[in-house]
Length: 545
RNA sequence: GCGCCCGUAGCUCAGUCGGAUAGAGCAACAGCCUUCUAAGCUGUGGGUCAAUGGUUCGAAUCCAUUCGGGCGUACCA
Image (cartoon, rainbow, N blue to C red; front, side):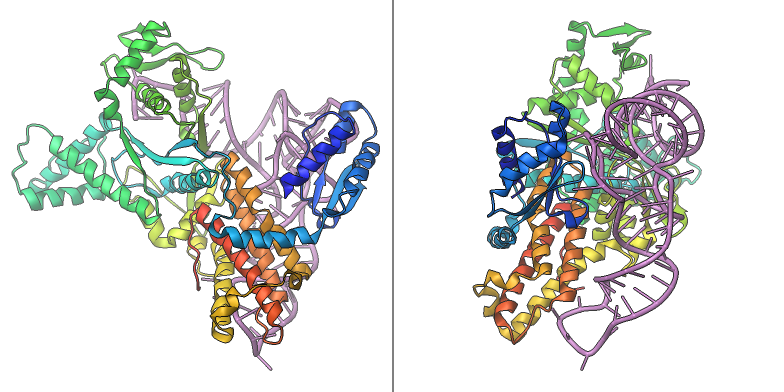
């Protein structure tokens, strides 16, 4: 509906020979100003140097002639045009919502396009810790958003298994295994201290007894640990309903020659140089402080080179849109990686990098420590166990990725009205309750009856429909910015408007069957929008609470 | 030092491609359940939008500087 009105406004502007401008068309903060408000006249006025109110008057005169759409067109303030929209238009959105059902809100703006979302991508050196949760949950929502705007989405997980850390992992496990026989067996200085390594050692011992005591290489331990860690990571992700389509290993880039080829490519193009036995990528001094090492003097590439090769691999696989999610600790390094890809001659404009800030956990007023070094790590598993999958998902997605997040475990755990997750879910459960009662008291047929739209004339119902009609626009804009917290903000107003309606208007009324039927349809529409919104952010829609 | 992100109500945060009287949840206070779930609804109080200067019809929003916090600033990933 907004699109249609924007078009009318645009046509009016060109009809009056005003220059084409970018204007806003939004519901005003203050509802008494109307349903939509535009600053078009102010923008035009600036451009042509005339009084904005005069221009607004000219435009609004034409707009008023669309009397079937606008019930009032007013010029206000400095030159805003405020529009009130005919309630009948909103009543018809109800029919649309009921017809589209689970698809209401989806759009096909990117139909036929392929997107690749890479996230989590934690190396398999141990279980995911609670801090990983932010990107795990963000990615889940973002993948959904992409799908809701028509993309075919590949969910991808990239892991570095070629570097030193996997060797450390193997050494750590070997050491724990040997400690079963000799508790004084040395543990590597930079080893992984987690309890899970001891568990793996026990499992190996149970199966192999002491047959690996004199192993001449650690490949068994490496493979065992990698496999076990991945199993646990995948289990954790599955608890949250996440399944990656592709697990891409760094080793693959060595095997298929991508890394070697890229290095040769850099050399051919003259963008790399050698110094002190290492290979450096020449960086643009306006943007970077110094050149960066891509191959160490030991002959091993740094993480940058495989990362570049990996992204080039993704580009070559033909995606229209490539999205990475990283923590703020990668805030600078991804720029180096993109720079390298450009130097290799690839267009990086299809790559979008989402950086999220770090998370601190607290329990009430106490902060929860998340040290990687000690045994005392708060894992993502623990968090999910403590607060539940829905609250985990909700709390991580509730805020803009761009700001630091305080995760209050006590609040998330709280099974009460304090907890913002329940506010939304409760609205859904309430509606389900109404339908249970409707079937009980009026029979199943009542839900399928034809309804009379005129029975929804009361302000609460119209207000509710106005909010519901915004959902597709909301999805559309959020799937461009990839900021799922805005969906939550929207759902909050939807839930709030419903709770208000519920409080003021009784749905089931034996004396007014027609009204009952119409209101049931309205409830069905609210339930649809809530359910669809929940699907995007990735939480359940409970039928009772 | 340099780079990126942030600073909005007592707390946690929305709002930021410039728009009208800056919002929500929690906390505080006062009300509403013999009728579909009170995990709800209604109302009150609470603000130098970190500070200063600038740009203009108009700034929480853009620019500059300062202060404060986070993350980087490796031949770690």
